[in-house]
Length: 377
Ligand code: CO8
Image (tube, rainbow, N blue to C red; front, side, top):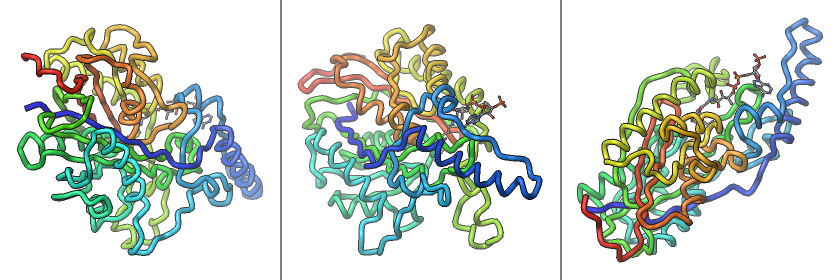
């Protein structure tokens, strides 16, 4: 049975924020804070710098669902209005936009889809699952559920979609990842205020025998790994109201030890991709592209070098960090969405995401053009 990705979609939020704008807001807040600290004799806070952000991460700007609140030194958080239960939730709205593009690319309608998997780092509520709302809004059949493996959510979702199709549970599944990272980012933390942006991706996974798509990316294999770590953590949760004194503590937002993450996750990722390639009989020299998680440019260069045994070119390991920043689970999928068109029939690539958990998800894909007969293993 051949199963593949036949469509992808991307929703890009309407507002963009440059490093300079973000740093200006942060530094105005620091000046205000330090004026207060001067009165009390507290140690002054250090300023942020756009040069540091670009050189340490490769990030130049990010998209956000709201920019006014983020750039207001008195607020420094997105302002996203509550909605009534009669309206689509904001994550549902993002998912619909991305899903429509993916469905059009795959040449399928909502009624052809048997499962919706909403896979992302943060769901805006516990229940009803946002995925079920997306199912209702689009008119897809079967069932839907939410899942969360932080930055690796989309590749884990693709793995589950693949297995559902293989098991015969559905012919076709939609994986959507509406990431509103700015909603849980501490814009007053110098170490991390620049890292994230918002986006939503969508992926159609289907039985290629039943596909109408002109082009498909056959899934040659998927591999997942997790290993517990506190180095990327967000303690926000439904029990927060049970201890109101700590409800607004900084650990209720994204916190990481970035350097430790870099050192510990990079070898884990390189090892997983290398052993995964070996298991499907593909030599590293035979892969044409690596669509890696978009957290840090230097990290991706290190991983690609380890896997390929040499430096990867910007074409072989493309980046969207400059424009999108880290969009959590969307990163590798945005890169796949934007940087695959020119590849040829039979070209092989790896989609790989990694992040909190720790978690790593790898999906090895081969380009197929409609009408191409399956090759012998
Ligand atoms: N401006 C100026 N200087 C700064 C700033 C700043 N903003 N921040 C830190 N510095 C200074 C530090 O104080 C330090 O100074 P000194 O050398 O004098 O002590 C110096 O810069 C170097 O600091 P670091 O060692 O922290 O800098 P790094 O080179 O390690 O770069 C990075 C920091 C960019 C964060 C880098 O470590 C990194 O990218 N690491 C990998 C992180 C990663 O991959 N994380 C994955 C997270 S994504 C995920 O799992 C999803 C979670 C769920 C989504 C959550 C959404 C909110």
